[in-house]
Amino acid sequence: KRIVVLISGTGSNMLALQKACEEHKIAGRIVAVVSNKASAKGLEKAAAKGIDTDVLSHKSFASREAYDTELKTLIDSYQPDLVVLAGFMRILTGEFTRHYEGRMLNIHPSLLPKYKGINTHQRALDAGDEEHGVSVHFVTEELDGGPVVLQAKVPIFDGDSTDDLQARVHEQEHRIYPMVVNWFCQDRLKLEGGRATLEGQP
Ligand code: GRF
Image (tube, rainbow, N blue to C red):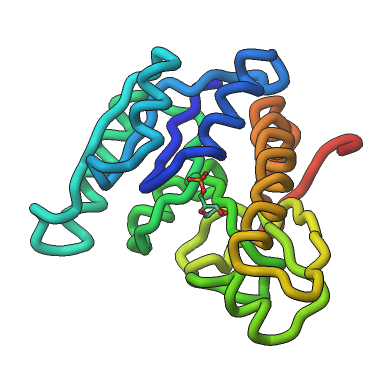
């Protein structure tokens, strides 16, 4: 299966996915990494792995629609089976999300439906939560609102900083995202009737 990964930053999830592909733990390969920011650290990491990279800056586009149309054209030039959002910090238009319905995944650092949007670690700490975590979900038009495929929980300890919590969550991200992407690549994971369904055992 052909995978296109979208990033805006560090790209540690992208690298975890690439590693899993190299180790044949994912039945697919990353054919391109696309960033909306030229400064995204993940771009160099992807290039070092021999992956095609592209930057499509949102700054030169007059509207979200215009940007997403161009982004769609760029992504589709790679003929992907799956589009993976891995720290892609853009709100996507309905037309874009509908185009990739059932073949676009996102990872969000909270136990959805809790804490959609940004600053999730800080919000979990501020709320005095005892646990936090990460969710992988199919992307739909509603921001961070698509059907959840898999979640992982982490404890919150007294005195945790956002960095502590983020590091703990990241470990889980790097574990569960490759699993879910592999399920998809094995044709076992589908979006059906607005729900995520998995064939066979996790
Ligand atoms: C992750 O925490 C992910 O859950 C969120 O953005 C962050 C990306 O981190 N959507 P990285 O760029 O993969 O290191």
